[in-house]
Image (cartoon, rainbow, N blue to C red; front, side):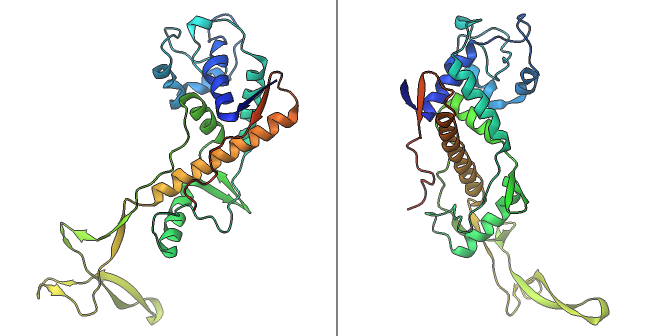
Length: 261
């Protein structure tokens, strides 16, 4: 039995073995999975990586483009097993640690990091009790990088604070008290620049924003962590199942959080 890293194993499964399987319309048994996979952008780009394929580029029942050099040859049984286990990742949810800190190394204050995470979370997942239901699919992440190689991007540019401007000029703000319903007073932020005197009102202030917006780094690093956790789960489950014939899988040597000190 050969020991192989999970990334190399999945690359072998999706780039070498499963492309040997049939394409729609070849006379082989058709699966409904064939028709759902056509919109997967990473699979469509498989054509950029593999020049020797069937001319119409349709995917087979495993979501990859068949290679004409192996057209009709059976994939290895371990590839079928791996594909089935990858499909089970569809049930994967996100458990968010209380100390999750995805923006380490970017020089942000705790307040800036919390604000970026709060803005990013609705784009990452929706909360269900103590878990988060992911908007993106771990199955697709794993397949995408099995086909393309590499890992989800996680490196980020250090953001810089920039003053808010309006039409290329400094923008000023101030707080005034406004009377609302039932005579209650509340604060309202309004323009802090006095156009008549051509100077800011007393007590006016300026605001800053971060460029680039660290929210993008939060999303990318969340995807990286989910991808890495999915690989760890696959490694454990495949080995524990005893279903692999010729392979034993070792975990990726990539860090779960490469941005952490």
